[in-house]
Image 1 (tube, rainbow, N blue to C red):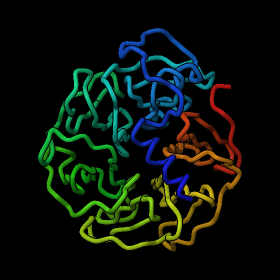
Image 2 (image 1 turned 180 degrees about the vertical axis):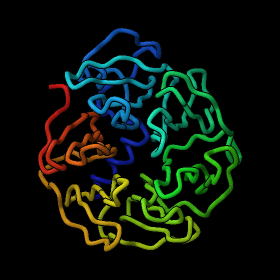
Image 3 (image 1 turned 90 degrees about the vertical axis):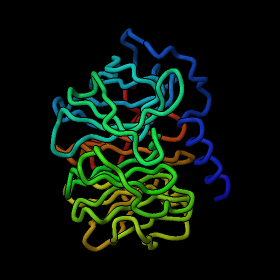
Length: 291
């Protein structure tokens, strides 16, 4: 288990890739395969393109890319090092992110209203410009967004103003806001899965005993987590009764998960080794995307 924790920390520090050197230029313009993209850069987030559900948005260390079902990838925006990448749950053309520009420093809280082509800084955040490595938008109240930078920060006006919500859970890996209540947020940590029912002021364990490397909540209230040693698990938010969806992962650790809102049996995931995986049966079986 200590080795699993070491691998998670290393993946977070290096950006998901084990052997890639991330020397790709920030202005990669040609169309490449998703497998080649994985060798050139680090994956920091995934989202199904709601305007074109057959397309997958891939946020990376070298910009935002879009891939079709054939696994061919094109550059959407060269903004460097997207972190905290997450779509607006109500507007299919609006995306949120944070991270670093090509010249260094932090981007603050940024947003795109044209599906990722252009980006603007909406706010610097508390003690910013911030670099939210973890960020999540509440489907229960899309104007409410949580981000991790020094402490748990929150905005209630779609990112214009930010305040401190509470302390960050120790050894945080991922965040996901509830689909049922804007004041409920989940945290994947090296110690387990936590939940806050008071907007991040306090936390309680809901899955303990093993590191949890991702947490994702879909608009229908399905709560997914990847538990090391157990695999991908799912529960309804209403009962928090987790069942294992798939456990045949070998040494793979999942760090990002995207579920198609139009077809929840269709999923994509990114592993700590940089592989992008796809499932068409609700996460029971997976194949490498683009192969």
